[in-house]
Image 1: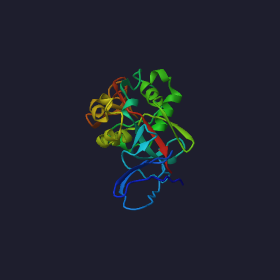
Image 2: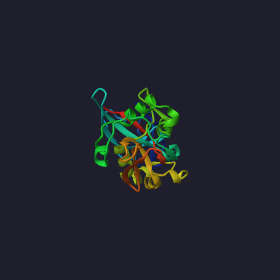
Image 3: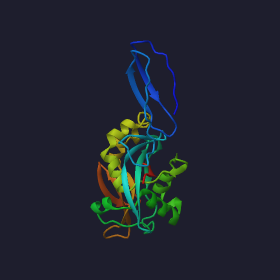
Image 4: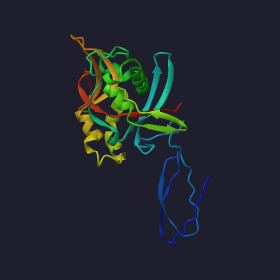
Length: 246
């Protein structure tokens, strides 16, 4: 607990900002008519109970998108994540998902959009699986996303990830609010979510073998819709942080 004494002329409105490391900033105003105390309960920036609204900020570089309930297919462990999309300044406009038409069938495969959106693999699982099994030089979408930035929460450092298609679809749904919360959009307008959700963004969710060919495909958002295409195509990268909340 901390306090600060401020002298304010009687009858004036006090505009205040309360900040503390690891907590959400509080902004407010109050008409001052006598000596008074303004007392506010601060909420941690990353709440273990998972109480967030779209656009809530993390580390000054990312905005809350949604929650994702994952299941690790290797050990059947469930984990709930709070998902935050990094600001426009951390995005890349044109990158291949992979440089080879067959990057290796390590990821779970989904044959249509509906199944892909129901997949339970987290962005963290997908990204780590690819980075641990394939040369990083051949999967630029994953290396670009994972190298974008880190954030430290409660003493734990988290790297950015390539979002799965569920998270990417939520980013698309909330793109206007997320762009509004992003202080870098004005300087990186070409990287705004409104722009790249139209031109195309890669997810980490794998389509697998494309019909009639030996090529592999992955899921993306383009023209604000879910689709899949050859992994050697080029789309934007919009990295996310997945922060465990339960």
